Length: 284
Image 1: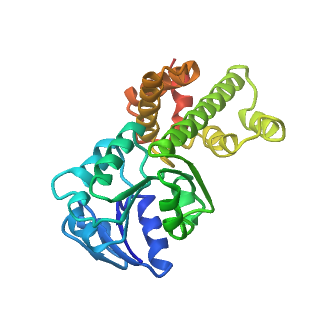
Image 2 (image 1 turned 135 degrees about the vertical axis):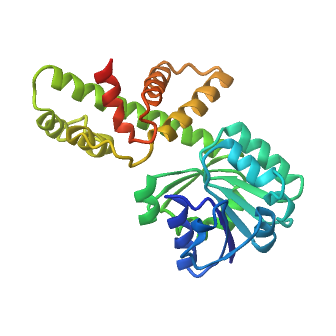
């Protein structure tokens, strides 16, 4: 297939490479030409030009505003994509923004799936991402062979925006778990106990988790270099708390974690790893 990709960052680039490696004709656009270097792809001058050349376009950018600009802005995808083509947005954005973009594209008979992913850079490189999809089931089946090149778990959650709701729930659980690990290890250290041994003990019991394994190790070793930059989780919590407010959903734990992420951001650690939640507690 002729597949477009916009958003060639730490996750998007390996995702695009997997699609090219699978034999698809890759087309790309990037704000910075250097981002495209080394990819076996045709480079386009605008998103609209890319959209005109492709059957399916993937986007993997940072914010709701970024997705809106790339799709609906001047020279956006909407002005190039033909009727019947598909936009697959793998970004993490507000559910309502996903619904609005989908409606604009539908007016031109262009399909959209909101398909945010979980697994981080490692999952993108290993093609082991979990993909949660909102949109029409029939459209998902058309592009499923492409998504299968990015990850083995593809779940159709519901209509437009539902994939983003699922991603908000994912972030809520995961970052709350990071905060819990940080608080546990902070308590252990304050009590004068070896935090490495505490983590080792917890890993064999009911508190065992991937967060304890990976983020706990970072905290024990005080390795706060970015795996995933904390500013992205801060952005995600802004989205999920806004969605909770709009729906009237009560999320007291998420609100507390959101405040800790605010403190992390305010301390200047936004480009460090979210394991820095430990440092927030130490400062408090």
